[in-house]
Length: 170
Length: 170
Image 1 (cartoon, chains in turn blue, purple):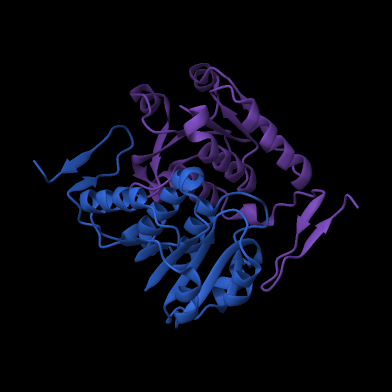
Image 2: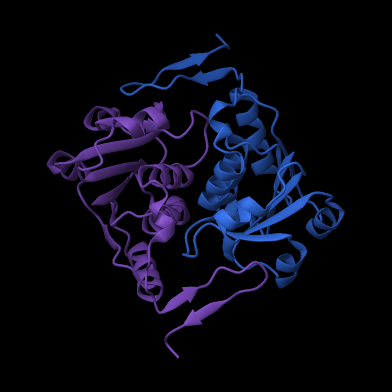
């Protein structure tokens, strides 16, 4: 399984970025997201999308992140612009084990670097935890997210010229 | 050249997402970003990052997006969850031409679909324009963003255990 742990989320300031992190986790093959700060609105938003667009992605908010990290029995990846290169890291990670991916908002406490097995950078330039998570999951899954069937009530069919949406509610 | 055009940016609501879009454009190999709404703060933020982290990325805000699209002589890609699949699109785009990538915030006017040569989806699930731009540029450049030298005053060296930062100001 692949779990994403979002730490340092500030309800007002980070709501849209954290929502994007959660949606990327879902779309790119993670099984669930845990957000350390309690935030009912994000939970409701993500559950509403899952209900309409399908899949069995899970969300939990308000959790002791240190406890989760300590009790995790698989690999722990911390995404940070200071980490080892993506290519080297991806090759070093045993993909048979469960994976916890830590995605911080702004400054991350130093102990997170120590608790992670892999501190991984998606490039060493400042950009976005949303992009880092997407690119990391793309590489880690070998692009398999593209084949995933969500079987939702709403399905969008790829089209170069117009919106082509199937709604199974009607 | 690769230019990114951000349309529909609302200063208060979108400031952090648009900042992430701009930083992803810079980190993943675009030459510049044009934001249709005037927003001096984002301009200043991005210029400050360019000054410290290097490269010759350019930003302009407050521009008539329809004029830019009409006058563009190369390819125009519109990133949308309703578009053609990434793989098919990437193969169809002539990479010798200049490229304009349109990234919308929320609802995009229907004429944008018509003005674009390629409406491209990075998966057909709802997620994030930040992630879509990163994955699109990764595929379009064949991962070349990873080799780009920015030669900034601040340089971060990849490291699995600790922050390793070279500052050339001192």
